[in-house]
Image (cartoon, rainbow, N blue to C red; front, side):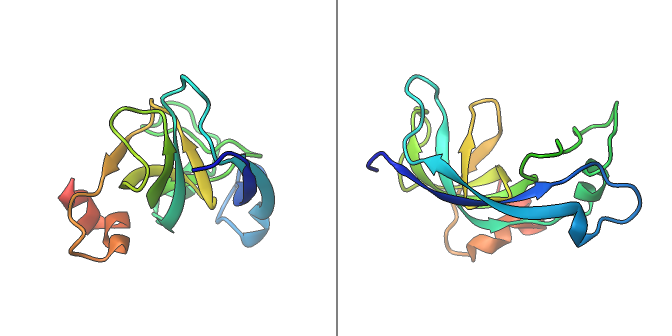
Length: 140
C-alpha cells in the first residue's frame, strides 16, 4: 500500500468510570494514521472490520490493579477483540490482505505491535463477525 495518511475515527475513554458506563464517559475523535508501518518495527497495520463489546470491558473502564487484564488508559482508544484486514505489515507472519482477529482498538485502523496477540483467520466459510464472539474463540 502506498504511503500517506488517512483519517482514523476512534472511540476514546475520557476518564476512569465509577458505576455503570455512560455514553458521556467516551467520545469520538478523528485523528490520522500512516498507511505504512514503521520500518524495522514488525508492526502490522489493520483496517478493523468488526469490533466486539464484551462484559469484561466494563471492569477495564475502572482503575484496577492486580487484575488479569489492565485497565483502559483514559485519553486512549478503547481496545477489545476485533476482526481486521492487514493493510501493511513488517511482521514475517502476516502479509497484506490477510484476515486476522485479536486485540485491536476501537478505531477504523489499528497499528498492532508484535507483543499483542493476533491470529490469522483460517476458516472463511463462516461470517467474519463470528470471530468476535464465542464461536470465533473455537476456531483458534
